[in-house]
Amino acid sequence: MTVARILIWNLYDSKTTLDELREHLPELPGGSHWISHGDERFGLIALGDELPDLGEVPRLIGIEPVIGEEFDVE
Image 1 (tube, helix red, strand yellow):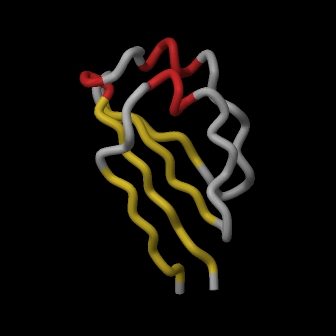
Image 2 (image 1 turned 120 degrees about the horizontal axis):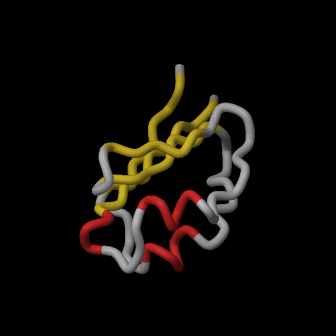
């Protein structure tokens, strides 16, 4: 069974901006995508058994995701 993971950060509480993050986003494996909503929310939708390497993203944001969920993909 495949796992879907969703991570969401509120950037208004972070040390960076969406534009700064975009410069440092690592490539993601197939089926995984970076997502954003306006300039204040940023996240990841990842499919697979492991969370992909997030590179510098967690350090740049400087706070934990406000949402971190795992789902079974049927």
